[in-house]
Amino acid sequence: MDLESPSRDVVAPMGEARLARAEVAGLELARPDARKLQRAGEVMVPVPMAELFTIAARQERGGNVEEADRLLNHILAVMPNQPDALHMSGIVAFRLGRQEEALLKIERAIEHGVDIALYLRNICEVYRTLNRLDEAVTAARRAVALAPSDPLCLHNLAVIHYERVEIDESIECAERAMLMNPDLAGAHFARAEALLIKGDLAQGWEEYEWRFRIGGAAKLMPATDKPQWDGVGFSEGTLLLVADQGFGDVIQFCRYIPWVLERCPDVAIACSSEMLPVLRQLLPADRIFFRWEDCPPYKAFCALSGLPRLHGTRLDNVPAPIPYLRADPTRVVSWTERLRRLAPGSHKRIGIVWAGRPTHNNDRRRSSKLADFAPLAALPGVALVSLQKGPSADQAGRYFGRAPLINIGAEVRDYDDTMALLECLDLVVTVDTSVGHLAAAMGKPVWILLATSPDWRWFLVRGDSPWYPTVRLFRQTVPRVWGDVMTRVAAALADLGRTRPVEQPANVPVAEDVPVAANVPVAANVPLVEDVAVAPDVPVAAKVRDAVKATSKRTGTKRR
Image (cartoon, rainbow, N blue to C red):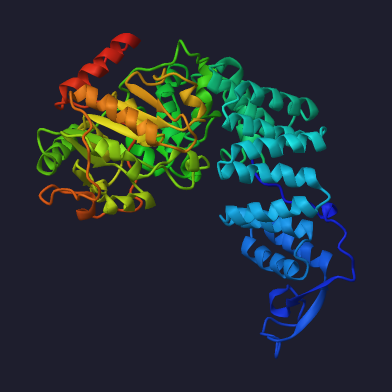
């Protein structure tokens, strides 16, 4: 769901008599040459309000939100309660990350405005971003009541219901929107996610195909006259797979490549270069391409995320040849020795990731903070190994806890290193990121921490995953509150190790003779490899391994 900018014809009458003044230098005025206008700095000229608003709206639609912000501030300086300017200024503030300001302005627009349904439709997304879900659903319902024939209002309500884990209500609203506009891609996609998270994969996969038709969505690939693969095998010609979506998706869905090869022996794949260590375990390196112009001629194409539909995947037939990724044995030896020198030999090595990529559209829900892991840090006999990357890695410098925190992210060069490092750990505890997918694809025990409204692939309620037999899921009970989740994780880990959480005095630093995050520099954007299967046997804490074997026994999946 995105905020919709008003079109020119929804601008409330502003009156030609009301004029705003703007700096000449800031307007796109026709002039004989590009030189700076003489003595223009202090000159102010009157501009019709509607004309200035139109310029601001054009700037916002063109992506120049800073300029739109400046022009709208001129309008609001003269007419502080003009509803269309308030609404548009709220949209601009939202796009600039100023959510609280956006909320105040759109609330004022609703108070003074005429086109209330449009304003309500947009404000529910602001409420959702701020985790004010009760107000979001109230605003969305009011928008539907004011504009019952507007399918976009119903689509937004469907999205809010999904966030509130009201899945049946979400499906109902999406279907009502689709009846009004059968081509509304957003409504189809909202229905797809709701069906998938319920476990209705048969209908869900079909609706999921609408994801590439959503307005503003990234194109799967350059324009082509070749057909999308329908799942029917062919022996002549190349099938081009496209590793779409995020790294975690690529790791999850690359499991289907052997199934594809059984039907089309000549397969190439287009992907990000970071995924080479993962995908070359399933395809020859010379069939993996990072640039469209380097891809070979092909007979048909298919998104990697579209393979579950063609396979006919249901909850009872998920292909899970775990492990389907493996670490390089040579690198495993190197990382084993590195950790031996850094972590006490008697301690369990627990890899942790507390935040995902900040630009992910679901990051505000899925990410936590290192401080939330305090219950784990209070356990004796545990060494925490930070696998965190990106800006959130800086939190390691402020870590205080009983458990040593080992931060060696700066030494992780690529996904091969990440896989080798994961192979040296006893357990991984992570929020919903690609690291979890990678560890799980390797058959490593991994505990994934989920928001109240998780991504569809984790389904509802269950504590296990049909995608990965060694995964255990821990779910929030209160949106964006991780305390109870971490308490349950710490208790489960204590049970495995026959240890119990201990009282941790405030602000007690880690012992100086144990390397900690603050002592090891962090590389800001070095990717972590997330696809690796289990490599040669590396000692694993007995209790953790027993738990994994028990899980494998329940699922009927063998583990190396």
